[in-house]
Length: 164
Ligand SMILES: [Fe+2]
Image (cartoon, rainbow, N blue to C red; front, top):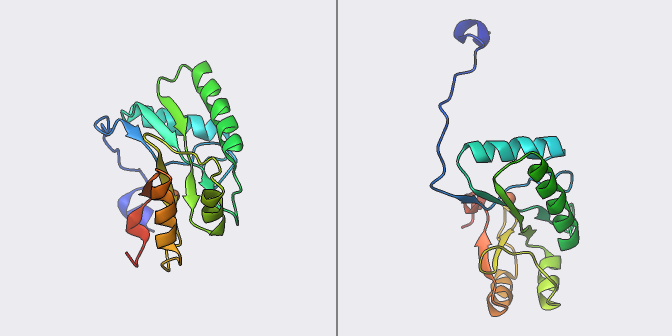
């Protein structure tokens, strides 16, 4: 009905220039390992879009979450190599790197306590998220461990957390 009234044509949007940002540091572009890109074709399409928006680099951050996405650094870095080599074959100029988005569950504290390798970007920045609905227990403990091991915690999409 609305199509008849307003027409079905999608409005033409002007291209944005987001080159001022330079680097994007939160996306899910490694195919098939989380709820992001489902295929290399989708990944390449998104990289082309990032590039057309003016980004010079993306640091993609697959989920690491004990209940759903048990991604290890090896799995993520192997996926990164595949993405990089496909992007190179297609002559994309955008640089591609990877870190992770760590969900704060019991396994994250365990990994920290065991001093397991965690994927970071920049100067040991560690991207993390937690439940959107309730403030997690042991958050002070988490920050203590992160900071005392030299990590610089970066909370992903902080606007989602109603309790903050
Ligand atoms: Fe996220």
